[in-house]
Length: 239
Image (cartoon, rainbow, N blue to C red; front, side):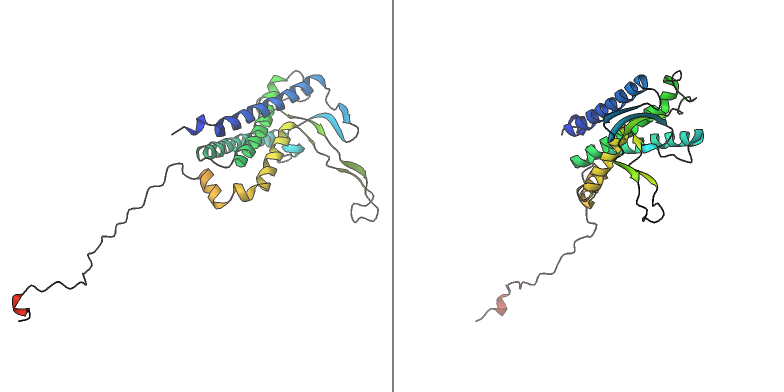
């Protein structure tokens, strides 16, 4: 039989991860080397902008334990552990010929996670001269640049609690890696009935060895024959 690692179900996810990871890093390197921190470049008016910031948190700027060096280190280690688990799931799924949708969505999530891990692990050292912060290994800040405020303005006065306040719909600033993670998770949610049915889970994460037939330990007992045996005694034969 052909090895699962010599099929398209292995090649395409690997190529997808490497391609998305390369795109993510090319964008970040370009922005970091051509933009000043905090610089804004409108692309589609006020709807979509390049807004260069750096953060020490999770996707879309969310922070763990309030940020800081301890929170940053814990977050980076957590990303690495989750990535190892994700790769295990992907390899297991490939071995068991899982649904294409599951393989591609896992690849998207892994590519995004690896993209932000590279920032966290290496950027504090590689860009030490350019950084606006002091950081070593595992202390780099993630480069974010996409800003798409779909709506901004003051909320109606009649709205309870927030009436009259200035509000921006979708204010997070994100990067390509965040988008990959979001799309990957969204595909999993939309396709959960196909990807995470009982049969699909057993196929994706179950044993790749063929099931052995069960051998019964119950000894068969001979059954008594109900057929009448012919009587060969000549004395019983009719005269």
